[in-house]
Image (cartoon, rainbow, N blue to C red):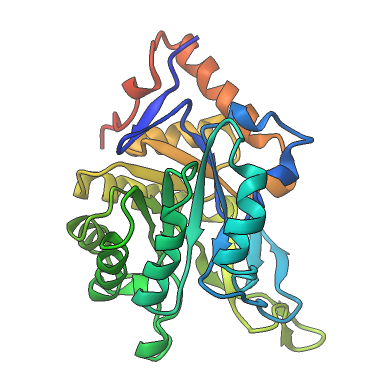
Length: 303
C-alpha cells in the first residue's frame, strides 16, 4: 500500500479524504455505514456563536448534476456544541474540525475562542461566505478586506490550525486566498457552493423558500477544479479541494491540481460509503502507477 498521510500545518492526516461541512452531520450519523477512523478528517456542520433556526422550508432541492440548499446554518450554538456534542465525538479516531460561521468578525472570534479550549479539536474551518450584517449583507468572502477582517480577528484569539473556506462567487479567488494567507490562515479550502436557483413553473415560484441557494454536486466540479489549481499556484499554504468530488478519479484530479487534501460533500447523500471508496480508490491508483506516497502526485499537473 502507498503512504496516504498528508500534512496540513502541524496536523498529520492519515489520508487526504475528509468530509465537507453540512453533509456529514457530526460524524456519528454515519457510524453505521463506515468506520469513522478510516477517513482523514471530519468537518462537522456549521457552528455559530448563538443558536440559529435556519431558513424556512423548503430549503433543499435536487437539480441536474447536484443539489441546491438554503438551510441557513441551523445549529444550537457553540456552547451547546461544547457541552453536548463534543463529548460524543472527541474520541473518534480521526481529526475533527469545526466549521465556524458568524455575522461579524467579533462573532467569529468569540466562537473560535470557545472551540480553542477543546483539546481534541485541532483545527477550525472559517465559513466566510456568511453575510456581514454591518456591511449591508455582503458576504465577507467576496472582498479581500472582508475576508482579511475575519481571519485577523480569529487569528488573535484562536491558536490552533486555521483553515478558511473560500467562496467561489468572486471575480478573482486568488486575491481572497492571498488576503487570508497574509492575515495568518494556515490553509484554505475551496470551493464553497455557487449561488443558484430552481423554479417550479406550475406554481411560478422558486423551489427554495428564500429564492436562491447554494449549488453543490458534480455540476460544480470543473469550476472547483479550476479554482483549486489557481489558488494552489498563488499561495504557499496548503489547499484543501472540494466541489463535486464523487470518485477516486475526481479526488486525484484535485490532488494533481495542487490540493493537499480533499473534502467530499454532496456525494455522501447519494452513497454514505463514498469517503471510504474514494480513499481505497486513491490507494489502488497509486499502487497501479508505482507511487509510494500520495504526496508524489500533489501539484503535478502540467498545464
